[in-house]
Length: 224
Image 1 (cartoon, rainbow, N blue to C red):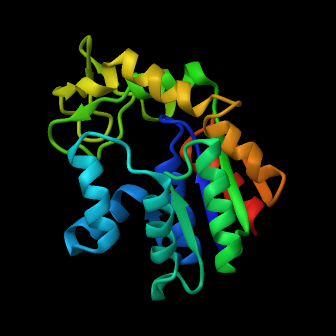
Image 2 (spheres, rainbow, N blue to C red; image 1 turned 180 degrees about the vertical axis):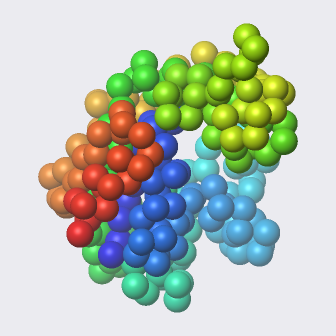
C-alpha cells in the first residue's frame, strides 16, 4: 500500500502516520531524513542538495523528486510506503505525480487530516514540554491531554512535574502563520497539491478535531 499523508502543523499528522506505519508495516518516509541520509552517504544527489542547503536556499524539485524515487525503490518499500512532508505545493505535486507515473509506481491513497486553521495554531501554541520527560503529552488547548491544575499551578498530567515549558518556535506566531499560509493555500500551496491528487487517486479525508484515538480509529476504518 503506497500512501501520501497531508495535514497542517498541529494536526497530529506525525502521530497518525506512525499509527498507519505500525498497522501496515510500511516505512514512514520523511523528506528531511532522505536529505540527511543522502548528504551523509555523499551521493551525487546529496552533494547537489548540500550546495543549496549550505547557501540557505530551497533544494530544487529536480533534485528532491529523484531522491524520493530512489528511496521508494529500496527493498523495505517493496510492500508499500508512507510518504510524509512532500509535496508542499502544486508544482511539487505535479512533478511527483509525473515521476511516479513514469517510474511505474502506483499511488494507492492520499490521507488528508482536516483541521481548522485557528485550531491548528492553538494546538501548536498550546504544547507544553515536561522537564522530566518531553514525551509526556501536555497541551493547554486539548482537553484529553491538558495539564492538571494543582494548587493553582499547571503540572504535567503524566508525572505531576510542575516544570512545564513552551518551545520558543511554538510561540512564534509569525512563523506559524507563514507555514500555515503555505499549507492552506488552495491556489498554489499544499491544499492545491491535495486537490491535484483528488483528480487522480482516492483521497481519504479524516477529521483531525477529535482526540488521537478517535482520529486513528476513523483513519484505520477508512483504510480497511
